[in-house]
Length: 557
View: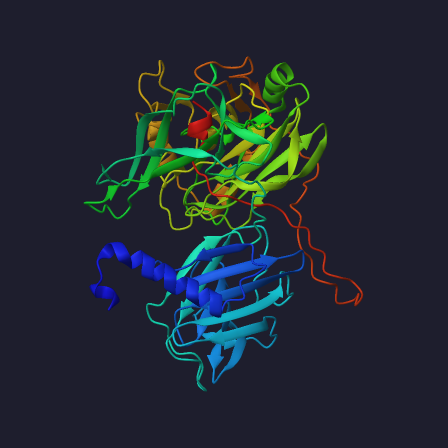
């Protein structure tokens, strides 16, 4: 039996079984994307898409029903679900939805189309398709934003009374279904080196940033790193020259809210490099809100918006001197913490707002990766970027502060671009004085000798730190909205820094936020008008991804 074999042989048998199954049941061809949804390798998903529709093929180790769904938050409630299988050699498929109480209902509008289904003695394969936009309120639109996929299966097929409860055979996974993927091929002869932590004891505390210095692989001439994140075919990350890093810092963020003990980590990165140089060297720019306690969110807010500006003053000086013809952005990672719900990177030139560089209307903190842009975007001297983050602080009793913990917040966009210039950060931070004035602070203690600094008056805040004073203020939704409106209009402190400790001349300038006369929304899908039977579904796809969450450390040091 399988369980009696030595461990070293088990992978071989699993691989052989999987290969045999695909060869006999799965159609397999034409599916550009694939993933395994469960931790035991029993639930395989493939898919492909065009501008109007998407087709899935699911292979599961079961002879019963297969469930697949799209959820607003990863839970069962209010989800768009399809359930199918093969019974008596005949495939079946039904479109369902769940209500707020997680009750399953058959959808009156059946928008999922059965393509084929097969079954053998151990596995079931089911393929189906649907339009990206169905105009059915019980369905979930499929866009370029993050999608929470939920899955389940059962050993028995759906009976006359409906599907039986799946028990523990269920799960969820965040992904971007409309990811076009990279077209770059890795050259033959490409070699790799690892940046790997070895047996790190994860600390017994909520949040830890574990940093370790590694020496970059020694090379005798210039090379390009081309994968982790897979770079476009004309761009690579340079190593081996006098201005390239010799050492890099790998920073791993351990999030341990349950305070688990005895966890040991040996994860890391494998970087592929080649002497076959690409045309351009890649760089990375951090944009958004400078991480600071001056970035603050009131408690109990259904929605709160923060904006971080990469100002035209910073880009005019840095790009004007280093690359007057501009740089081309080809990928973006948008970053927030647990309160984050949506992020977009807005782009302005002269008096006009262009289409957003990137956007995610369903941001998931547990799923963050670089989005490869469908079309590269030229960034010119004098342009202006705004990273806009939407949060919810419902259920929180105290202020949420800008900071490193996942219970703190950030609002950042990391831009991968070429050719490389000496610009590390292009960010802003709202001035603190008006924020304190909003809650009634009149005077702070000077000279400032402690951080956070202390309040002098009025008496009710005397000798409190400004963070304690903010927490003491009696917040309400109405006050929170007024505070949000005020913060978005406050003068900003410009952060414009080079790599290392150097700064551009605009660092520390106080400027007003850009006046936005009209807002450009991300490309969207629209349902046909009921009054216009000839109107078609318009679909403009936007934006992509490939996992690589730590390229900043590799390219920035």
